Image 1 (cartoon, rainbow, N blue to C red):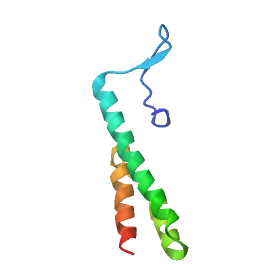
Image 2 (tube, rainbow, N blue to C red):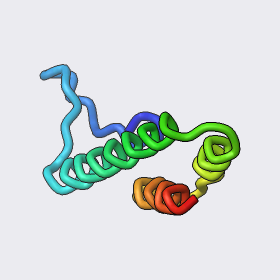
Image 3 (cartoon, rainbow, N blue to C red):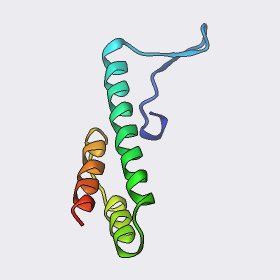
Amino acid sequence: MGNHGELPDYDDDSGTYRMSQAPFDWWHDLVERYQAADDRLHAMLSGKNGNAYDTLLTDYQAINVDLEDYPGAINAVCDEAAEI
């Protein structure tokens, strides 16, 4: 969240960040989807070598989408690499 300028309001009294349920749910869903996609990517990278590894890594590094679309883009790169 901090890397995207989206930290919630900080409550000095409690020493915690606070947000309403809807944004929390959105971030929770995004983090879950991102973690699953990232785990898949790293599992696939560990099983590739040579040109297949380089292609998968290059395609991953070229992803340029909005944050909420990032997990889907990682999975699309993995899907394409699975066909190689």
